[in-house]
Image (cartoon, rainbow over all chains, first blue to last red; front, side, top):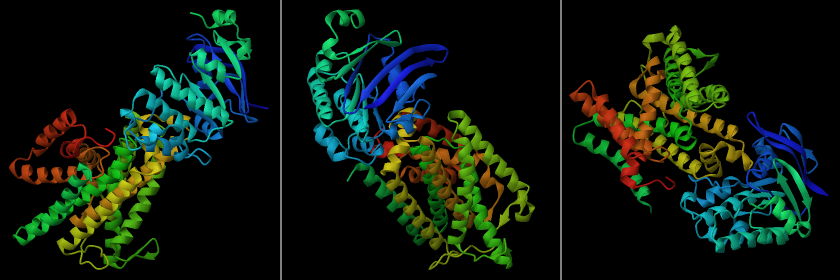
Length: 228
Length: 322
């Protein structure tokens, strides 16, 4: 059964149309890779799902409810946790406050997040602004998990991170998948993304161009849709 | 113990002990100055919830300060004349005045907050200012309580166990209120609510994306802030034995903002440091020149340019998350 169904959404930034009809589905416990070259609409799709750039046309259904025109805080409360591009932690709060401020009841508690990212546990009283890029990314994921989402959305979670830190993030993503959490992930590291994804959605010029399993995303398709 | 905690304790102990030392040395007037410092600090702690934690630059907090002042004045006036207030006999009691002031200020804050908090930046400043001016002009045209001339308090309201006519007792009551509101501010800042409020100050959209609706959080902060400022206003009226529309004027709102900037925005004891410097400058420089505010302005400029953490930043270093 699908947890999230996006049907033909069209979104604008002011007078500029960015999405021309995006369709995607995320099932319960499924990891879906949202792919495409830069500027094809991946982040806008995520922003539309989360209510930050509301879709003007089309429909977004989450867990049986239409959330197309819901306010973003209601969408988050419905169970969609966002890890935004560029991490964007609350720099004026410490690590603990960043996590606790967003907490909602569920299996993801402060202890559970620290177990997933032990480095955060060592820096609980440290200002988020003073964390390294990797630690900020862990904090951003932890913050989203503390909302106890049913769907976690990761937008370029490993971008700009050192390889060893990327490994930590991907290890966490695999662990989250094993726990049964549904994940919609945008990332350019195909070698890490493909093994963890159950299905792929490729965007081109603001609309869905291809959908299938990672095994079906051949080198030719990768070259056509993802090559520079 | 952090450096900020040490500085805070030294500052508060100094504020508590020095007026008694001065009184013993034959300078009883310093007790009144210290009381003024404590009361202004309470008002600034109230505003610090909205401004320091929530980033809400309210230019209308004089309204809440004045509402508290009028609550004390009106109760004292009715009790003195044996008149009922809205059909009820009111005791000349400070806690009753605080309660009425807090309720009235809270109600006004809900109404003004519901409108002003839908805006931000300069619009928020102007709307809060406009509401405060409306209340200011209402007080001016309210002859029953003195209108433009204000209302004298012949005898201060009472406080259990204290002789409020005695300056030292009034100071101790004011200092106790200061300690309570500082403790409240500290617990609020470190609570989940405080974290969400500070996060909303940084980025409203990002807060919404993690399931927190910023509006009600800000409204609650605004109302709490108003209620604390009202208590300070009630004490200010008790101290001066007088309440007038000047307590509601926009310059009072400006003074409260200056206190916070001087002491350190968002710092727990920042308002105390700000009030200390403000009152000392007002008294000391005011004795030298009528234009003492010029020097206050220079000091404010220096603080803003060279120490964004205010005096607490200078004394105790950067705030936890500066």
